[in-house]
Image (tube, rainbow, N blue to C red):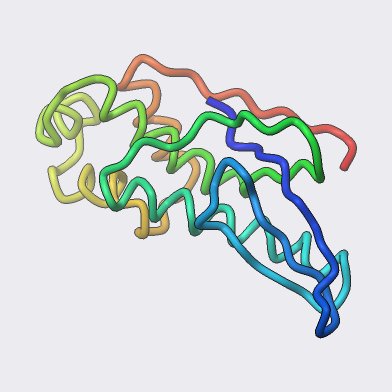
Length: 140
């Protein structure tokens, strides 16, 4: 699972720049400068992807391969991966809680796209779901 998408940046006739994503049309943002618009794009993309999960839909697979590459923040990517892996596993929240040795309330918070979670518990949840998280760092 890779949460990086290509953004299209266009100049706004009223000034500034607009950023959209072909693969995630819900993610739209803008900025006074190109740099500001691209910075805002990371947050807009994360919000849109979390919203897609909150609605029970599947996160789209990146298809576009042209534009400015944008990835969500690491904690957002981990949250998205946990929710997606949980759905794919077909287990109950109580089963996830059992595997984690946590309460069902804690498991519910880990699976809530809008609840902020620390990276450690998200990694634990991924392991409990048979997944491994790798972090890649590259030049921007």
